[in-house]
Image 1 (cartoon, rainbow, N blue to C red):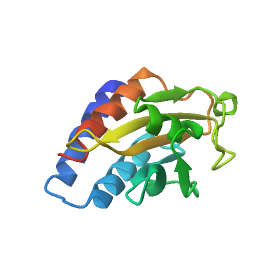
Image 2: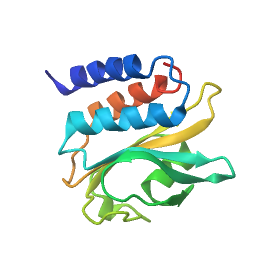
Image 3: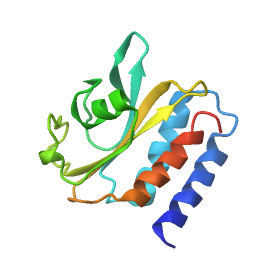
Length: 155
């Protein structure tokens, strides 16, 4: 099965598992687990940084699979903060070349981050996927993750 088809299959699986679930935490935990398992070991760290309701310009670590993550990331700082500020997805082939990269784990070498919006179109979180490989992600990964996140809070 090609990667695009695998993402489509995973999207359906995640939607099926979280259907009717009202807990955002449970939805994020389920998605990060399913994605991490499906693409291991390429997905070294898979998880969500959630917009802090008390500090609306800061992300706080949410459900994830992998090694210890950064606890907080200000909007505009690092790859995740960049996505939070711009609300646009990004693929970083070599995180060591990204200006202001935050090294939560020095084993991370490449990253894809996509925004997660709530039903009103507000930024709710970012989905962050790291790999120990350089250049591990491509537009197919970005599109697959975006499609999953489009319905993650409404499935």
